[in-house]
Amino acid sequence: MREKYIEEKLVSAVKANGGICWKFVSPGTAGVPDRIVLMRSGRIGFVEVKAPGEKPRPLQKLRIKTLQDLGFKVFVLDRPEQIGEIIDEIQSA
View 1 (cartoon, rainbow, N blue to C red):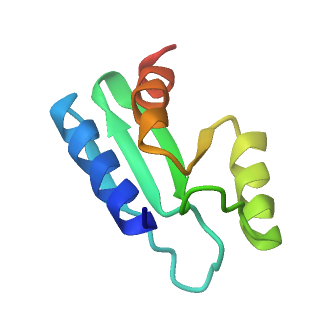
View 2 (view 1 turned 180 degrees about the vertical axis):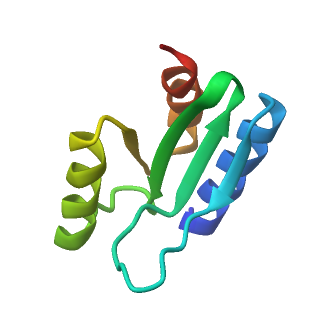
């Protein structure tokens, strides 16, 4: 299973739940998560998508920690089965 397949499943699931799942690109800042998930009521989360079993690189870990330190929810997604749980977590208060 490839990362692109998992990412497509995430985008579809977020849309089906009434949200938006934009590709997150930050020119000049490498290592940012792949997707920003925007749900109703102002709920926001970031998702780093990986192929099954892959882990974030050191710079990606740093960016994840920086976002978490600011209070954002950040997830590493490497299996389609995680998508529902991630969406639920983003939607929760």
